[in-house]
Length: 458
Image (cartoon, rainbow, N blue to C red):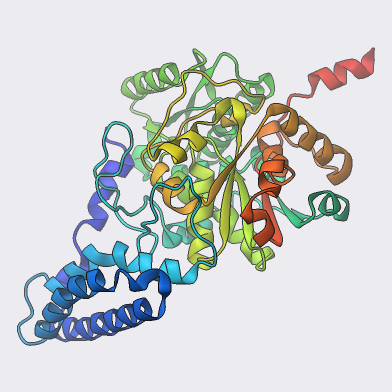
């Protein structure tokens, strides 16, 4: 059975404009001309863009010529609209360079962002390199749809603050506490959106997923239970015991794999073939990304003045959704990723301009051991301003601060955002000097406390 990203790609391939009336095409032609006039005018007033004015003029002249003739004899699929669609990334570069008060990070391989932060995924090579400027698997509309779909099944989590931690950080920090979410982590958002978007025939065969963290540990199992369907959960043998127990508590069927991505994925494929279950990918899926993006919608509703958001990064589902939603609402907002040193594939990918996969990972943050996918990488490449890498000692110190000062139980993956905010790397960057109010995504609180409880009995 093809996955839903393949099946639903057809939704976006035929421009709606190809079916419009002559009157609509005339109006569209006028809008195109107005947009082109605005963009060309902007390029002349911006020192950053003036040197590219001739390129823009040449490209847009052919489009505006088509636009002018569209009202006289509208073609079957208007060439002015197709030309505008083809040039949207170029237009977006003008608008975004003029809008953003800070330049892209040095590790960014490009600064090509589609105009509406949405669209089709295009062809990519085996390393994840983009063969052309592309759109993204999700957008602000799919994220808002996800928010409405999952509202009955998830919590709107609180934002906590601490003047004591602010003093240490030297900035105002706002903690979006997904550790208080159902199943103890943000993952229930993407899982619920994916599972409740299935039609009844698909859902009847159940769902399958693989994860070492909260996606499998509770999110998919709980969402499947709420939908009343079976859930087959592939979990590596080194997963924390508390997360395995969560799967069992919610009725998920545990299937063990080796502690590597290849084993997880191959076993999940086998289960899918044997049962007909639908794969609910932990991050590389439009419904998962859209569901995770609802974190950003809530945070910016609760604290609209935030200028920077720090997000844990692993497979990229959470940060992709957060970035797409946040930059659609406020294009100048800064999105920073926090990554453990022992699993810094995303930072290496940003530096190399392509997806890097590590042979092994070694970090206390068990939820941050996955690698970027072909749907999450383009968002990370284009919209994540920088990646802050921290070691496990810094993560433990941040956990300690959350427990002792914020009075919140968090897992290592959930504490890494605070670790990044307190790091020397961040404080020595231009991003720190340009940030004032920083949102920290506390992604989860599923930590194994058996050692603590055992020590209390001694």
